[in-house]
Image (cartoon, rainbow, N blue to C red; front, side, top):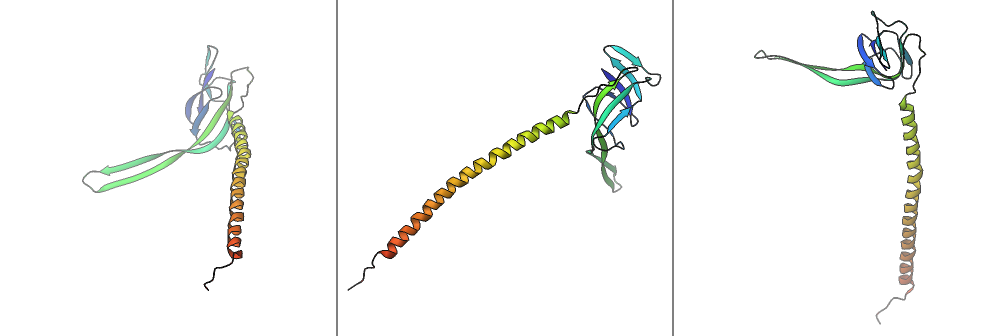
Length: 171
């Protein structure tokens, strides 16, 4: 199942559970956006071509975030004229997760973004590591502390023994 949809003046071939970068949309992270400018819709080998749009077809997407693209460098030069100009910019994009595609007379089946699942798995791993890490560190610190206490106890005993011993005097 796929569709060719017009998003922000460009045509994209989209499928469910796909991530797409499009030119900046006026939407916040987490918003659900529907695109009705579907030019072509394919489902199990049945193709519907619009004239110019497929009537009743809808593409639903969730906004994952607004990001910047790679830096583009613009360099202009006129040889032997001493003219050199260097400019650059980073284009703004919106990352979309395609939740579902529905044709004419079909109901929209919404797929959940895998981002939330991945984040919850990462959080679980992080909490496991945090729980394990202090236990190991405290055990090592306890061993080091016991070793230090033993050294401290031995050192004053030697000093006390030296102090208690009578000094040899020359007679």
